[in-house]
Image (cartoon, rainbow, N blue to C red):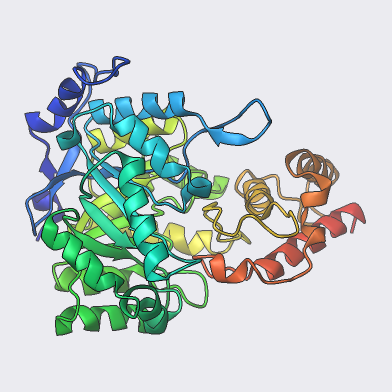
Length: 448
C-alpha cells in the first residue's frame, strides 16, 4: 500500500472535537484558529477508530514546586495543553500509573474530564512491576478508572512485557490470572482494545508473536519504540531494531503505536553537523519534524506519541501533523545516513523516562545524562587540548555541570549497586555510563 494513499485526512469530525469541548469545560478551552490545518487521522483497521496520527504522551507533564518545595504537576498548564490539543484534533492520550511518580493519570484524568468522553481515546497500562500479585494488579487496574474519571479504557496495555521474556510475562499476567481477568473485562466492554508495550529481546518479541499466532492470547495493538535511529541501529543488549518489530506486526495486521519517536527529545536537538544537513534540504523544517515524518511514513502506524511538556513543542508538533507529508524513498535513505552519523557521537541512549529514579544514593541519573548529551549536540563538548577554544569549553562544561547537578548528586557518587539496571527500558548499563562521564569530568578538572 502506498504511504500517501494510506494517510487519511481528518474530516470535519476531527475539527469538531474542539467545538464539542466548549460546552463542557469550567474554563473555556482554546479553539483552533481559522488557519489551522486538519489533524491527520488514521483508521484502526480492526474497529474503525479514527485516531489522530499525533498522540499525547503523558509521561512529561510540566512540573512546578509546591509550597514545601516538592515537584508537583502544574495542573493549570496541563489543562491548557489538553484544551489546545483537543481543539486541534489530537484525540489519543497515553499514560500509566507509573509515570511521574504515580501522578500522571490523575493530571490527565482531571484535564480530560472537562471534555466530552467521546472526543478522546484513553490509553493506560497495567504497570505491575513491583508487585504483580493478583490483588495488587487488580487494585492498580481499578485505581486507574478512578484517576481517569472513566468507566472504560479505549486502549489498555500490559506495560513493557519484553523485560524478562516469556517467564516474566507469565509471572506478571498469566500465572496470577490477570490475563483471564483482563479478557473478562474486555468482554464486559470496560476494555475496548488490549495490547502491550514492548522493550526487550528479539526472542521475547517472537514469543509474544507466537502467543498471538497460536490464539492463546491475541493482541489488538502493540506499542514499540520506533525512530530513525532505532529502525536499524537499536542500542542495548536487549533492544530490537524497529524495522523487524514493525514488519512482524504489519504482516499480522496488528496496529502499531509508536513511543519515543524523538528518543526523549534527542532527535529534536540533533548535533549541529546533522542539523545543517537537514536545514540544507528543508530550511523551514525542524529536526523533530523530520523524525515525526519518518515514523508517519509507515502505513501500519496508527499513532505516534510525543511527550510534550509545554505549549511550544505542542504547537510545533501540531503544525507538523497539520501539514503532514510522508517521506519518499530518497528522503528515507537520507534519514538512514543521518542515523549512521548520529551513532558516531558518544551520546548516552537515555530518553529521560525517569524509570531509573529514585536512585537509592541520590544520584540524578537522567539529569547527568541530559547535561552530557546536550553538550555534545550543542557542539560545546570539550574533547582535547588540541581543540579550538578547549580551555573555554572545559571551564563551561564544569561550571554548567555544577549548576545543573548538585555536587552530592553527581556521577562520582555512584557505587555501582545496580538497582537502576533492571529498571531501564533502554538496557543502558547505567553504572558504566556514570563512570565514563565521571572519568570525563575528572579529565577536564585535571586539564588533560
